[in-house]
Amino acid sequence: MHVGGQNKRSPYFMEGNRLTVDETEKDLGIWIASDMKCSDQCLYAFNKASKVMGMIRRTIKYKEAKIMVSLYKTLVRPHVEYCVSAWSPYYKKDKELFEKVQRRFSKMINNMEGINYEERLRCLNLWTLEERIYRQDLIEVFKISQGNSIIGFEDLFVLDKNNKGQEDIT
Image 1 (cartoon, helix red, strand yellow):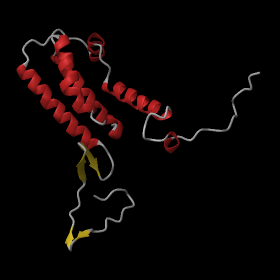
Image 2: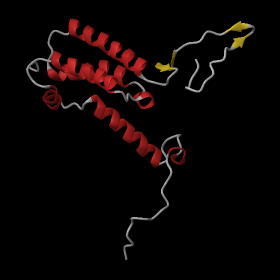
Image 3: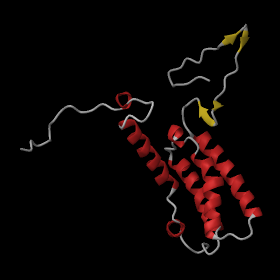
Image 4: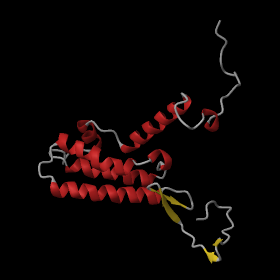
């Protein structure tokens, strides 16, 4: 895989054989594209979650809210949120694809048909997937700032040592 816009895309050889070039590669369950965009991973996660939702729709007859939310949190959401800190979606189309999963699932629950999405989430005590992703990012930054991560604080952040704008409190 050739990564980066400045890459000259030179051919690589191993034992005299030219290696094939891939545009996407799966590593540790995450699809990585040569342009470093996460759209392939978003589509992969969406399709996987949709298949699980279809299985739940076909097999569960009594779709009571407590049971369905438990199934959603256990079987569907892990596919959407797997390693999301590493490949967090940033395109609007990718974020909408994720919300579509939760939106469709919440409609499957009894007595939720005529209610808008935000109200369904409130009734089910769920956050939007985008809010959950932001929360995970904030938790990770907190862990880094407290020294509870293998990533060093100084590797990601530069503290401003300029005291301009701060008033001297005496």
